[in-house]
Structures are given as C-alpha cells and as structure tokens.
Length: 189
Image (cartoon, rainbow, N blue to C red; front, side, top):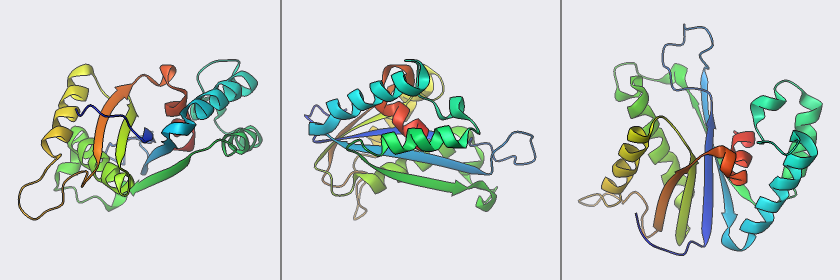
C-alpha cells in the first residue's frame, strides 16, 4: 500500500472461527482477535525474546497456543515470559450469538473483512505510521481481495472518518511460522 518507515508494528492473529452456524459441532461461540503492538525500536527485542521462548518451551518450533492446549501451568509460565517483552496489545472479542443472521456477517469473507477493518481502526488511533502484519487467512485470492478492500476504504468520502485517519500505514499477511511476533499474537488470542 503505502511506502513508509513505520514507527509502530501491529502483529495480528485470531482464535475461534467466523462460522455463524453455532449448532455445528466444534464451532466456537467467540471470535477473538489480538494485535500485538510493538514500537519499531523494540522489534528486535520482541523477536529475540520469542526465539528464546520457542527454544525453552516449544523445542525451537512455532509458538502456538493450540500446542499448549489445556496445560494451564505451562500456559501460565509461557505468558509470564511473554509479558517481560516490550509490547502492548489490543484484543477484540466477538460473541457470535449476538450476530444478526440477516446481515453480511453471516458470510465468512464479509465477516472477516468487516471485523478486521473495525479492529484495525481501533488500534491504529494515535499511531503516526503503522505496519500491520496479520497471520495468513484463506487463500492467496482472498488475501489479495482483503488488501484491496482495505485500500479502497483507506479514505472514505464525505465527512466520515477515514479508515486510518491521519495514519500512514501498510498491511501484509505473513505465514505465522516465519514471524515470531505473529506467534505472540496467536498465543494472546
């Protein structure tokens, strides 16, 4: 999107699914998104800290919440280590039982785009230049359509606020295996 040197990075991942058919077995009632906010000057420290957490608790593999599962004592230790790292975070928790089934939120693609855009708007406030790195979602075609969706809404006509009002920003998707900071967002979500 925009070429910029970001002063803040946001690493985004989610937990749960966007399926509105709550009767289906395995469907979550909640959809949780987390954005790990890292000042550009702390990016190397966060990455290095996550490498150490991976070494210590995950045998140098990807740090994933699902790997920890219900091992609550282990989860607590990992989270204590993570909280030593220089980052902040935002979370969005959506109770899908509150969805109006007659809206676009009943469609996975529409729900993801809308919920992600509104979440991005919230955590972008007060940031001068932002680089968003989100865990890959869907296929390549969907990710390209999502980037186009964000770009189209970068500036909104009329008196409405822009998607990222007075924020210079860009967005990319990354494979969580390649981004320790996205793994941090996964664990928090």
